[in-house]
Image (cartoon, rainbow, N blue to C red):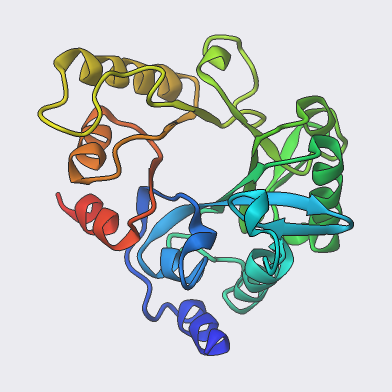
Length: 256
């Protein structure tokens, strides 16, 4: 069944038009991680990762580690196969797929294991050699417990890091910190019921504009995961709209 799904994606079958703002939050919790998101047109995917011994396990909490699958089998191996069969184009418009890796424990150790996986198939990923980007099928952004110095000072650099609102206006390289992510609950009052306050909408629009001007993409986590929340972000120009409800979110974002 997985092989058939890969073939469908590789030859453009069963894949919706790209939704440039659609971000599959907690993608691994779905019954068909990676595949459902791509089939619905999502262009960025998020996975939480724990290091356990020499393995990278994908899970939401430590309580879910028993029986958890590895990052390699859930994401990296299928992505490598798709890239090979589609001449490097995993996303239908040919842009790199964003893969957000949220490190949940042992920051340095976990990153070293992720880096080792990247180095097994370096051609799959965007990387930076002497400050210049070498294109790949997947652009990895590391979030959560991020060892910034280890990632950003490496040569070649194998990934980018997920920034925070405090990174806006610092002049940091936009390839090094391409995303600006922060908590909705700490910045806005609206909790999903009733109309979104005008002040919240304007604040969101202003932040999206600042990120855009710096060549970055804005994302919030913890936004009410419903149509009102998705529409509010879309209308404000938020670049990455996260959702656990792939079908409903895709339908909303596909509307004009």
